[in-house]
Length: 289
Image (cartoon, rainbow, N blue to C red; front, side, top):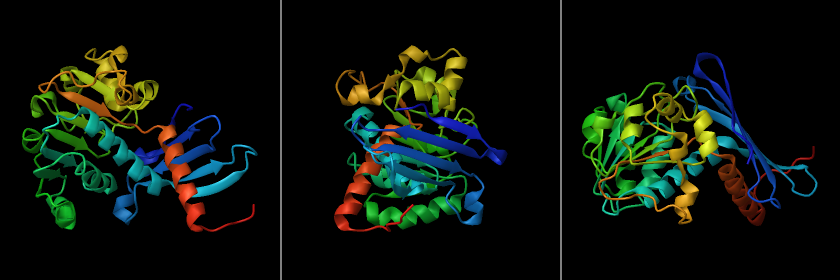
């Protein structure tokens, strides 16, 4: 696993690269992503890019895969794992913040983790929230309440998942109730922070996908450490909870926070799986370089 690289561009754009192997014997995988925040206005996904898979024996390129097609489900799947490990077992109410591709993916993934009774969908525009709620209501089989009032929705929720690209905090410590799990996937760069430092200071447990990457790249983590409300040594990698090395949530009253910036080993793992299935199914286009 190599360090994630983030290079800023104009108008809030970022160029991101991820490099990893799932094991020393596995293919090398490099993902190059261009995050372009203006794309939705032009009918395009804000995340563009490709995943390059290299043969583990020869080093030759063997596959070029669609970046967003892999990034979207792997991010939502990571959040689903975090919710399963960190949310209260009796969690019944979910709030998802955002109305883009990640919000849609998180609604689908997180609704499978607990027996939810209600979902709040919060967007900047009421119309966008209403459209997405109507689109997924029958599919998910859970009432989806669209709106624009995040503090009100968060105050009623056991799990809050922020799926935006906000540069400034949207959620404060006082907005969440005891026992809540807060998930942030939009604080993926130093200049992006979906939650306030106070919220991380209130959290009894702060979990990240990988400590070194989060410390260098996650805006909310960087801001909380700079504010003196969080020590880098207190960060817990999700993997240590999944393996039982760390006990995770201490009590049903604890506020728990999980931040995902995305790590390359996730991309490597999903790329291998997709390539294996493509070969088995005989799909894809073969080219000679």
